[in-house]
Picture 1: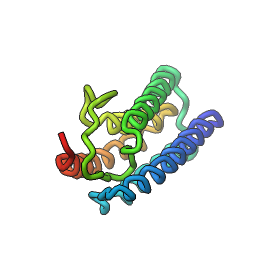
Picture 2: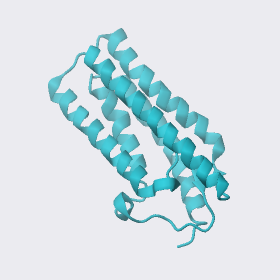
Picture 3: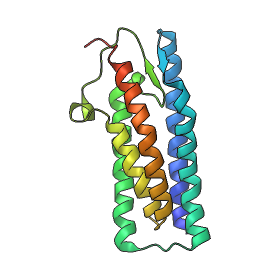
Length: 170
């Protein structure tokens, strides 16, 4: 359990780093006329991610979920790969990356890095992490609940983002 709490703590620190990058990029985008889209669903996304980081260790502790090596180690590998993909997305998008949907008029849509192969690679990282992180320590209820909530949120988010990105130069 202690090692799992360390893992959750590291993910929390990673989220805080993301938010710092997003805050800086949001200021940069707004200074260049950036327009935010889909503001209404953003608090729900934040709530879902906070719930994931609270519910997973709570389920492990309260329900005595064991670490099952045959499940836990592959799920840890999936979490690490998801983090790598997320930061590849952040590096590829540079100043255009954000936790919010912000479009700066006149900028071209990024098509390099993982965006060469996937339309929304960052969301693939979110999906993988959302089910894998709880399953590192057999928190299957949290994995299922977050996956269901996240699917509903991403259905909204990807529609908003696709509409917003359609306004960018080709």
